[in-house]
Amino acid sequence: MSWSTRGLDRAIETLTASRDADAALQTAEDITRREGATAVAEAIHSARTTAGVLDPGELPIGDYDDLTVPQAVAAVKELTDPADIRAVVAYEEAHKSRHGVVSAAQAHLAAIAQEVAGIT
Image (cartoon, rainbow, N blue to C red; front, top):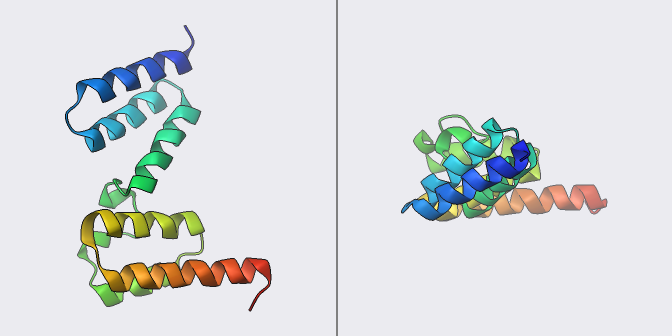
């Protein structure tokens, strides 16, 4: 059995045995990464990011949960990687629901997309 298969098997066992899906995904990611199944771990991390279930410490902005709306908006505007911005949007929608932050992040994503497409 390869490490990837072994790691994936452990991840599936964890997911099916856990009542808390968020914690199960985190555990599955940790196990697959530890077992050397990096591609699987990255896929799980991507799913966690999309679902907005990252821990605050995993966000691309330090001490994110302690930021006020204006501070969070300013921090989001400093991000340059669209994946990081999308992670913040997903986290906001899943945990904090601060419309001002989500709107600013989406506007920033749109501005980046326009810049990349040469539409400014």
